[in-house]
Image (cartoon, rainbow, N blue to C red; front, side, top):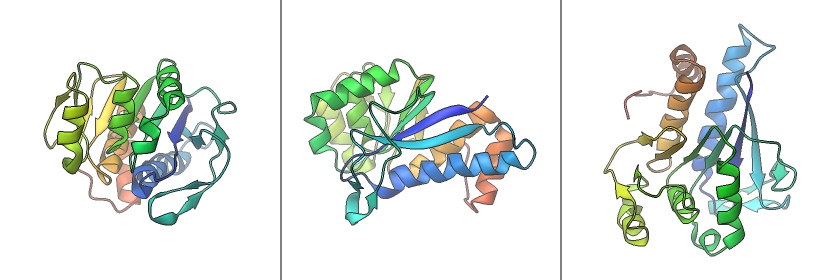
Length: 200
């Protein structure tokens, strides 16, 4: 089974928040193709509100593959962080995230992407994590959440959150293990020359 995996992009998204998971899942498919080229585990794409270029944090411009209207049905949605203030004021963003997450096998946030999932009502009652610098702000803004300290990621089945920036790589490797097997996750980390600790 090839899972459709979408990574949400927006202006001021943190580069490694989306590029780290992108590298993990695409690398996993490349590694898996050595033994089974006909059935990659992941088809990875980026999606934004429109097809206009997204200017990531520090100025990198990225062209999304799909907009909200054209993106295929997703099995996995990854919501990175960055400077999310503008996104949090946009009711259509929260509505799209909630609508999309209702149809996915799982939805995961990286770093301050947790604010976007919380705003969409997807984290109510869960223990969550985010970048250490933003944990107090997340707890103050969404008192219905339970902050879980310095864990690299937290898995609640259909919803996951990770800590800041590089923690998205750790969570993504964990998801490769969960969805496609530990052997592939370990081979992917080795291919990336990444020192992955599979414990959260």
